[in-house]
View 1: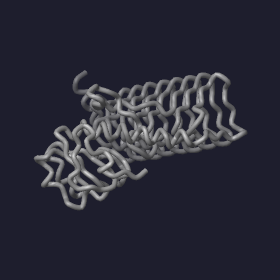
View 2: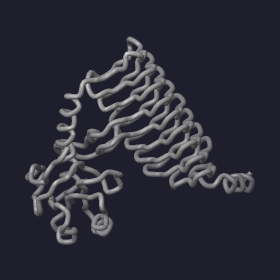
View 3: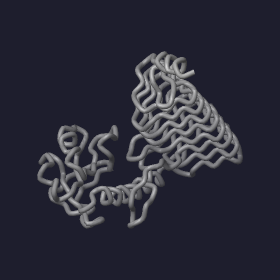
View 4: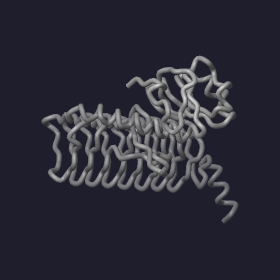
Length: 297
């Protein structure tokens, strides 16, 4: 959906300096295009000006002159608060779009009578099996032959905090969730919608154990194994064939390479190379971790 800065004049004190279009509210790290991003510190100006994905900038009066003139420009005393308010208005428009999209369920899908499927904005493909007490929220697409076990919730709101109406609130999600063919998710797991647009995606034949959380905007490849109690935070990318061990935690924005292994209980705070095995808290290359354990025993 296309917006213009002038449509939000006065929201949380927003003042338009240079009108321009944008398609999504987002952070600079969000992998989308035509974004409206907030900038409240000079340290981020060069990165914003070099971006080919930004369409408009919301910043402070003091920083306005530093923003590249090719961008639409608005100012506010607190650009992060103004950005959250604009985002909430865009979320209402997105919800109206979803409401107009009737839920489509393939006749061959098997859905337990106790499951809750939103009446709009959901697509469920051929051969899908959905178990008891599953909840599928608007914006979710489940492709063919997926199996969803009891108590799973797809399309939950992700944990992104902002101020809306002067109160600390969870920001509404504008994106969706997509499960590629053959995904299987065991009981009581949650998958969050993408925050600003696009989809949180789980690749073909990926399987998750019980009690897994996959946060907003994650991109998970094909045939990944995700064990019980894993916590995958926002914008994480996981390559094909990776293994994520029980109770592992993966930090926001980390990239886990194809065929890599994250060991049991590891806390991953940096990228993991393809084929690498990491262990520990904080996770390091597995052989280094074993050497460390031998030294301290």
